[in-house]
Amino acid sequence: MLFDTHVHLNVSHFDEDREEVLKRAKEAGVEYMVIVGFDHETIPKAIKMAEQYDHIYAAVGWHPIDAIDMTEKELVWLEELADHPKVVALGEMGLDYHWDKSPKDVQKAVFRKQIQLAKKVQLPIIIHNREATEDIIGVLQEEHAEEVGGIMHCYNDSVDYVDTCLDMGFYISLGGPVTFKNATLPKEVAKYVPMDRLLIETDCPFLAPHPNRGKRNEPAYVRLVAEQIADLRGVSYEKLSEQTTENAKRFFGIEV
Ligand SMILES: [Zn+2]
Ligand SMILES: [Zn+2]
Image (cartoon, rainbow, N blue to C red; front, side, top):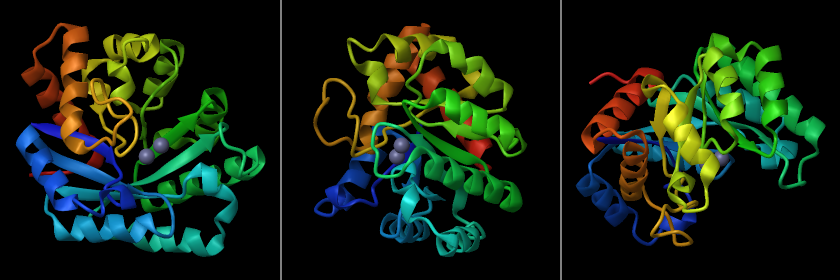
């Protein structure tokens, strides 16, 4: 049993074979997934798929790369969607300093507004971080994000920041990079995070795990992430998959 906590089956990469991708996920043991919407196009698609399938849930937020496009209108829209029974988190939101479409101060302002909204609607948040860990932590602390909790999605920084995230009640989610041969940081993190605060994800169609690196990623491959982490921690695959699934269900408030 696996829970892929971060997927983008709502993008065009899956338009040709979405049903087959879902079938392969089932066969690989993926029992739950959260589809993350991040803009005008992907948010309605995430909601639609969550309505269509019992085992699929949705998260809605505004991506930091496009922060400059978010107005009051989008914020009101997110607030309305937060009421939807299958929406289990707000995000992804955060800071992305790799791309410069949105200036840093705009990204920070949009990030803050979404944290404030999460506190208002009482939903946890999913954090996207690229080259911005210290600023992310600063904003989370200033906005008291610990009141709702969240996920550091596809965590890719060193172990040094993990305790601060855990202290805020956050979970650490690892994806494909933990399987890359040269990726030392995620491997260290995989061993360090307490078992009850660890999550797994694909972030598909991006970041496919070894040996599919460079190809289109899909939820079935979350199994490779789980196998690698189990191996690093010296626990069985069954134990690791069971515990991460339980963590995700607790985090998203999903009962069965
Ligand atoms: Zn992301
Ligand atoms: Zn994502």
